[in-house]
Length: 227
Image 1 (cartoon, rainbow, N blue to C red):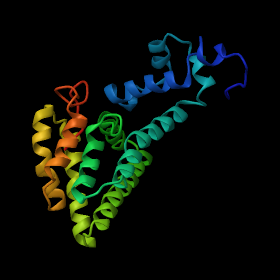
Image 2: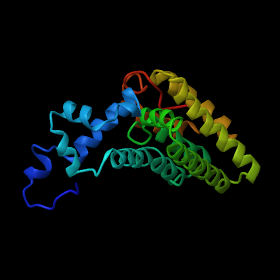
Image 3: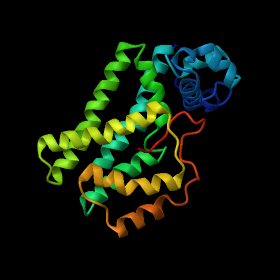
Image 4: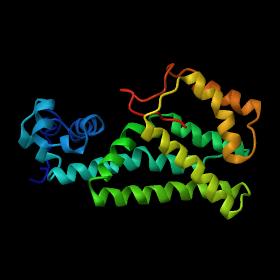
């Protein structure tokens, strides 16, 4: 059933819930139980809504799953590629921008990344989207490194080192406390760029993230956000 146009806001956000509410409930199921659990009736029961309410916002389950895939791109690939072009005065500052993106759950949703990669093992269409995202992310990192003077092959290998390390952390469900991560960051920057970050750059970075919780691993302990 197509979503009906109406001036009655209750019909959109009241007893039928809202598109965002259905989508967030589906997200929660995906990251904690896997894609097989994302079904209309269990979602309705979780939200305390009727099954038919779902169809005001999504044509069918496939439409909901497509929306989850769009959410994943918006919460991972888009922020990461944006971080690769963020203003920086030095190459090491540019790399700190990228690491900062991985560190923030709102700019790189590691729980969703983990769930999507599990989903991709079962669904060729999703796997193709993941592979395309991998290429896009690597290209962003390579282009950033090339702008700072790295040759094509060197930029390629460094980009892969950055990216595959991060994806490895997610797959391993690694956890580190904040101080451990902050202590390791200068070494990662030197490995990734060939240069050590300046003390003032690290001071700014620490000031930005120093008020975060003691552990920056994602809730539930299923993956970390920073390599």
